[in-house]
Length: 367
Image (cartoon, rainbow, N blue to C red; front, side, top):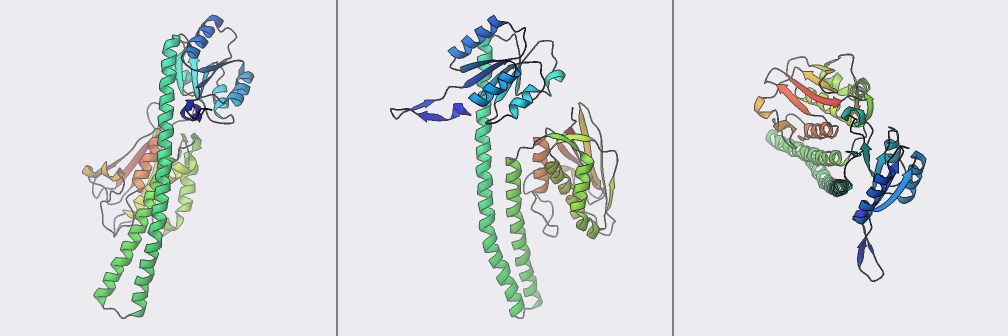
């Protein structure tokens, strides 16, 4: 965002670029006097204001001036999305709406903020400053997440090398030297511990990357997500002799296909890992209509279950309720939680020990 990048002036000092505002009007009946008053107040507050009349001019000026904020007075539901998808940096779009409009009318237009047309210009200035501060904080957070991913990637890389050495020489010891039964047991512990460290390092990287990624939300057929996930896990499902049931119909939801596939994969893998010994594993994936324009998706299994006191703890990074006899780094459910919340949903579990588990999460319905 331009406002966050100071320039050097000729005397060697720094100056902050003015915040560029594109005031775009598509309504032909717009009150010109109120618009001029708005321009005067915004200019006096230090904003660099450009006016546009009509959708085509708005798109041209947005491409030319790369505004930080677009004030849009329009009833064209497509214009917000066109501005967001235009070339260059993505601006903050503030839609000025009539008091008669409802939240349902405008919630899918794609603007970052909705304000009444009758809002006094002084309040408009404060609203713009607030949303710009929020955008600046989001960008700083994105940079921190990027640094975390880079750091995690370097840590995972630096750990892999020594681990390969440990595993290689431990295996050589077992091949070259005759070992007693207890010594082979100790060597097995060394190898399994090295494998667990590798899983943890990769889990940290996967969690950091999930924190960094922002899902691109579109209408996604949930059945396609489930079928693609099951295909990728077909060998594990076959090895576990699991009976998988997909309850149709599965809804179309607002989400990112690959991210939702990661959630379903983690929940199915979780069911396989925590199945009851000497009991045929049964897993059911289904959905039902929730409240408030949401779908409720569930993954139900007949595994060992989770005690009530751990229902929240299992979604915390690195939290494991069992020993190394069950593989994993304790990151799968934490990543699921982050992905679902990034989609605007929530995830939880209903379970008792010995009675299986039902993992449920909500996703918004598309328009």
